Length: 262
Ligand SMILES: C[S@@+](CC[C@H](N)C(=O)[O-])C[C@H]1O[C@@H](n2cnc3c(N)ncnc32)[C@H](O)[C@@H]1O
Figure (spheres, rainbow, N blue to C red):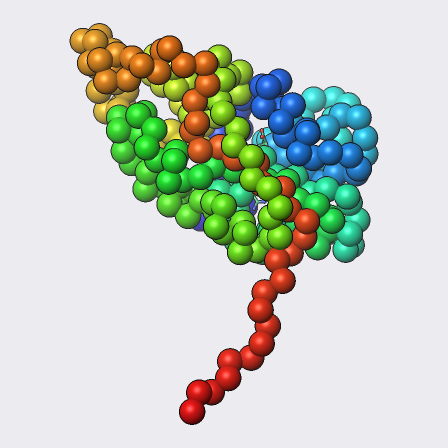
């Protein structure tokens, strides 16, 4: 693993071509964030960041920072695992589609709980997302470290005092081109620009991407994709495993020392 965020110096080159805030998902994230000052961790180009109150963004990749539009919140170059802020400096710490990229998610969650009284994490539940049909064409994606070690609800509950987990269904015409956004638009997974904007496919080798694209193209042309997955074309939304967890601090771990048994 290179410098934190270095993966996004590469992915970040074309990130904003396909990764834009989806207003329906933004509404759910902003509802969970509620009121108060915000620190946005792994902020990237600033998608989903509130623009109506004091916000500080934290982002390790200079390339992603460059994509932040003029007038967006001030950004500190850094990582979630080590935040340069005093305890309880903010009301809310938010993290959107980033914790699976952190080198030490437990440390990052501890930091979220230290610097803010509430935590809002938009993440994916791997046991759901791994069933997604596109991964049958790009099977190497299931073994990426960002996937195999992606923190889910159980991990979040172990570290934070989670009060609520809300499912976030993905709309059929989702504007933000994240991993499962194109569940009903299979041709999109053949587009090199779409592939480059989602870490799920961007982190595969050129050969894996080419082979997967060839298989998918052939199934689309023969009608095999539609026979297998055509029912999706009648759905408005899809559960790809995306969730919002809302928490109110660090989980109090049982601290009783181990007692020797007779
Ligand atoms: C998929 S992007 C999400 C960006 C933004 N939150 C959004 O929703 O568009 C993941 C971001 O996490 C950042 N990141 C990677 N490692 C990180 C770390 N250890 N701490 C904080 N951010 C990190 C990446 O540089 C990248 O900008």
